[in-house]
Each structure stands twice: as structure tokens, then as C-alpha cells.
Length: 532
Ligand SMILES: [Cu+2]
Image (cartoon, rainbow, N blue to C red; front, top):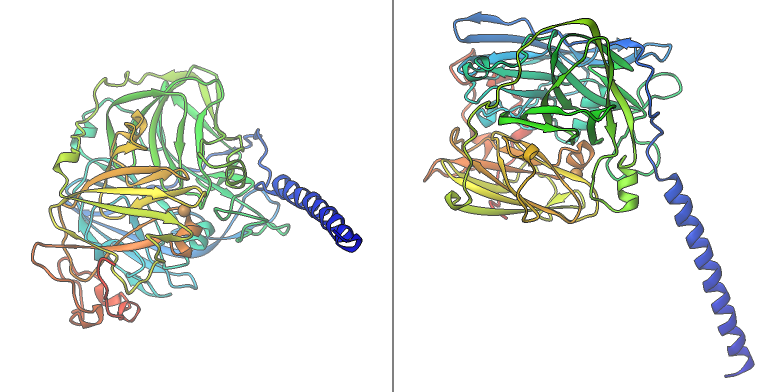
């Protein structure tokens, strides 16, 4: 080796060493900085929890009509200034819709904000054209009036906009609300059921604020899941407390956040009873100390209180199953207070929980006629971005199917299916934990894991209007981690093009209310390339 080459080699080694040191420094700095905005572990619990009002319903027998108006508003989030927000019949969030199984509901949704939107009934079993997905846009100033009959058990559902590519921002600004379904079976059970007294909606969201007190609407710093906030709101109230006047209180927990996963439990680690999941009540109450909710998921819990005590509902670091950095970036190390329950000195009696709740007939893998696979990764499902003009899957009416969903990109994801409730057969081959054995429509899927869902497509074949399946981390959904499926009757063929649908009749018709206001041009591209 010549002296020159030796020098080069030595220089090369030195250079490599320097680069390695710089690399380590950069990575360490990234790891240290790679955390979501700081969330204080404890709250002052300074504000009385707001409870969304029940929406006023116009009822004639089993025909129920609701009116929702999306509007701009101003909200006091304790920032010293009013924050510009969006709301439904109010400044922030919307009223709680409540209807019974068997009711024929009609909901007039008027768009009073400046952007086109949609309104999706999350968890509802209904015709695809009433679903409020991206194919049912509501232009500013116009009204959309979907109608359907409720054919599913008592459950805690919710509603929120679902415009293609713009869901995250509209939900974040305040467009969301709860939708409670009642039925006779649930009414016969001795469960706390008085809305706003011993049955309380708990809509959990996290927000970021700019220094001027307005909502920060894009993530700060590096993020794999989108916007994580440093302020928790429950029903729009920061640092909330709630006075409890009964021995037992039922909390209808809804994660209406864009990206954050909560792992909820009480500060003294007491047991509570999980009584329901996304799609309804469980077979029996399950005693738990923690329940984890990813965006879109719900849980109904009942907690027993002692006179005079103050009890905090807290979110512990969620089990995201991601690598150190991916977990940290997704809020996996955060621990913070959510809501304080303040028991009165004397608590009214309510009965002990029943040992049995409702029958949840298990869907059996042997009954499935088809298995589909869904691979989530890189803002795609099965290697494809959401395309409004492309149907990804077609399902036959009446079929029972297994959907095998896997997460391939190291980031947390969830999977939500429209139009149906599913059951979980297994997670990575293991039986699901008790908290995941009821009806579900949204489920967390950790990186490099898989889950098998089973579902039945019992109603509502439609050759033209698709349902959606997607990740409910809203930034991922907006970025394209979504697909579409049609439910077709046996022998039915997909409509060649939505634009070829006959013009909608003017005036309401049974099952077709408001179709004339759907903005057909947005769905005018031909549907091609089935089952790619
Ligand atoms: Cu995702």
C-alpha cells in the first residue's frame, strides 16, 4: 500500500468515525425531540363537565326526525380568549341523538360551515347511500336528509364528517356527536340509564393551541400518526369534573380524537365493569382496571362510588405494540388525568349490575364463505390509496366473511368497517381478551400484527353506493388508507357508473329522502376495476 493510499484509508476511517458520531448525535436528538407535546400528568379539575344536550326529536309513532345544523362558533377552552370552533347546533360538538331499535329516523343535516362536508353515522347498520361517507357530500348552505330504520341492538355510536381527504380537520375543529340506540332488552336490565344523571357521555379529545388561543390544526414536530394535543377535552370541557349523586355511574366512553390512544383506568386502580363495546352490550359485565380505546372506539363502563370521594379517570401509557420511537411519537409514553368524579356526601341507591346482560351469538369461522386480506401500510391498503372512483371489494349479500387485517409499516393503525358490526376471531392467532369479545366496528392493530374479523352482510345490497373500510387514525385515513366495498345481491352487477343513475326525483320519497341534494357530480366517475 502506498503512503498516499494509507493516508486515504486512515482519512476514510476517521471520516466514517466522524459521520458515525454525527449520526448518533442526530438520532439521539431526534429521539429526545421525538415526543408529542407535553401533557401534564395531573389536572386541576377546575371546570364542571359539560354534557351534550339530547337532540330534540320530532316523533310520530316510530318515525323520528332530527335537525342538525353545522355551524361556526366560539368556545371557551380556558385560554383567556375565545377559540374559533365548529359545532353542530352549538359552538362545539353536537347534541346526543337518541333513538330506539325499530325507529325510522330521518336526520336533516344542514351545512352552515364554509367547506363541503358529509355526516357519517359511525357504527350504524344502514343503506350505503345513507351512510354519509365521502360519496354523500353536503355543499355549504345545503341540506342532506338521510333516512333509515334502526335494525341493531342498543349501543353507543357516534357521528362525524367523512369528506374524502378532509375528515381529520373537520372533526378536530369540533364536528362530532354521540348517537345512542336503545332497545327493549337493554331497557329491562338494571343498568344506570338516566342521561346526564347516572348515564354520562364522555367524549375524549386532545387539542393543541397556538399562542393566540386558536386551535393548532397541524402537528407540531415529527409525527407518525398526525396531530396529538397537549390539552384533554371531555365533551369540550378542559380539566373537567363531574358531581356524582348515585352509587353507580355509567360512562359512555368515546375516543373522538384524531390520533391519540387512551388507556383508561381510575387513579386508585379500582375495578370497574365493562358492559358494552362499539356495537352494543356484552354477554356479561367484565371486571377490569383498564380499558384501551383507539380513535373511533367506544366502551360503556359502570363504576361504583363511595360517598364524598374524589376519583380521577386517568389515561395510562397505552400498549401500542410499536417500537420505542414509533410508540413515543404516537403518545405511547403519556400518562395524564382525563376526568374527576366527585361523589356527593349521600349517594342515591341504584341496583347491583345484572350477572347476565344480552346474548351475543358468536359468529363461527366455519360459517364463513370467503376470507379477504387487508394489508395496512404506507397510507395504503393492499398497496392502493383510496380512490373514489374505484371499488376495491364486492361482497355478496347474506355472506359471512372473515377479514384478515395486518399492519405492516411499524406505525399504529386501526381498522373500521362501515355498515356492519364484526366480531374478533383472534389476534395474532390468540383468542381476543374479554374486552374484545363483543360487537365491534373499530379495532386497534399494532405494528407487525394481524387480526381476524368475522362479519355478516345481512341487508342493503346496492350496486352503486359503496361502504368504506379504513384506518381511523384520521391523518392516515385522509392520506389514503381507505378502500370501498359494494354489497351486491346474488347475481346483481355493479352499476357501470354512478353518473348513469337516474336523476333523483324531487321531493322526499320513501328511502330516497334528500338524494337530490347529494351533489352527483362528485361521484360521476365510472366505477371500474373490481377486486383489483
Ligand atoms: Cu393508520
